[in-house]
Image 1 (cartoon, helix red, strand yellow):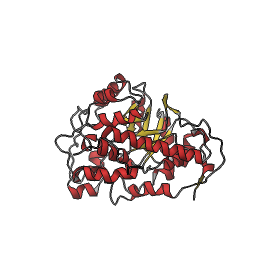
Image 2 (tube, one colour):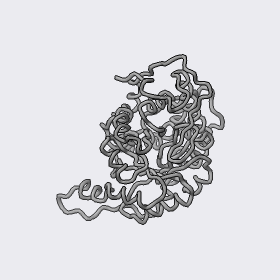
Image 3 (cartoon, one colour):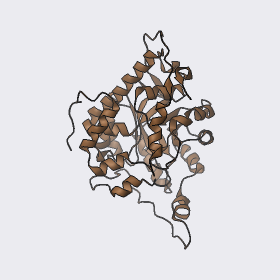
Length: 363
């Protein structure tokens, strides 16, 4: 794999990184990165939903001295752009998550590290200069969960993010057709507990209901976790107002509106479409983040106008990582930031707090 050491002049937006990444990645890595569940309807709708929302176009605003600064769960950030948790960055670059952390930190972006990272948490933390959060999947072995939590605390991570929408793997048909497998050089190096095994099943029992889901986490597990750490805990994978309310009731400090990039259950709504109702239900009890389909600074502006506190970027960051390593990650996030500033300025918004629904035209 050839990694660029400079950004080509024709890369001027996130979409430009995609074609460079495709040229550098083998079919195995590419299918893992780009696949979604089922017919990939949700993957497509995540991005198209932003295109259905138009900017209102306010003019003659006094935006001198404007900025994009904010505070998120006690962390001062220069902009509302964070790197979403994604597994196995070494599929896309030999330095993996360490390079992603370097690039994100160089432009002040927070990064959520997947528990399935292909580089040790300690090595990632050593390369990072921006805030880090740890993503967790709750598993039956609570001791293993607490071990990861304590590592996050010891390394000075800013918080935890629990993925709640993937108690079992999505049926990603594109991966199945391609026969995707992890190469020997890539593994989840931070997972020390043995794989979860299915309980013995009797004739007529379901592998899904009596096997996998019999061990799946519940709201009681979320309440247990929030009581085990001083770190703020966000729940990722919220798509309904009732689940958002429940999340805060069990001690969550914030929620992330996410359909897992369309990778788990096809047919779910685009995240931006459910954002307003969830923000209303949250009633300011904590930040509401969103991911899925964000490709432009104007998309970020639209999400903020509909009530999001910050956004997380997934696949495009991996395109940039595959293209130019840490440099690519930094450039991609900086590009989004600059686009956001332009949209704000041309919409009469000097700060993030000035952005509201009056700046949008929705159906």
